[in-house]
Image (tube, rainbow, N blue to C red; front, side, top):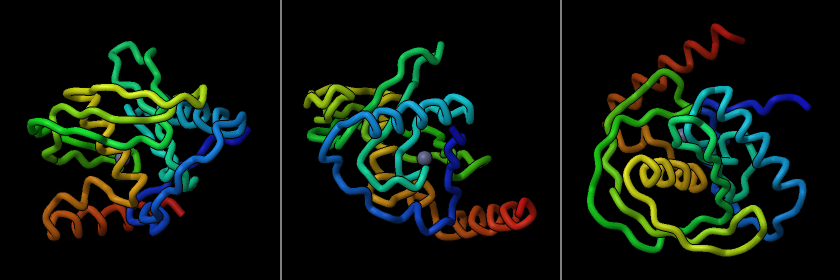
Length: 167
Ligand code: ZN
């Protein structure tokens, strides 16, 4: 199977809002595992289906140091937030750029797991930040949207130039 291609900013397909997953079937789980492979290879700590041009509410994460604790979240919804945390965020769709973004430090969310079961979980710190970043992708939002217009335009220009040189 061909490896998944990760879309790069400012590709307009990154702005499409993902639709909820209605059935957790074999195809979806295969996609989740291919996304995990692409995320580990990249390497990254999270990947949303939007980034591989599939507009369904599916994301994969692994913030563990040993890269052996994958998490698959389907139709994730944040139900509570607390505190603030600023971290330097990066994104596989915005390669090479890391900028400070403020997120909630603790979150609670509802999601569906790879067995199709609904569950709730609490997340804090890096995991909470990563989940918020990936859920933004499902809404067509990128971390550069939190930066100043000037900063965003500089990043956009440089990435477009890189993409042109590659093609
Ligand atoms: Zn991202």
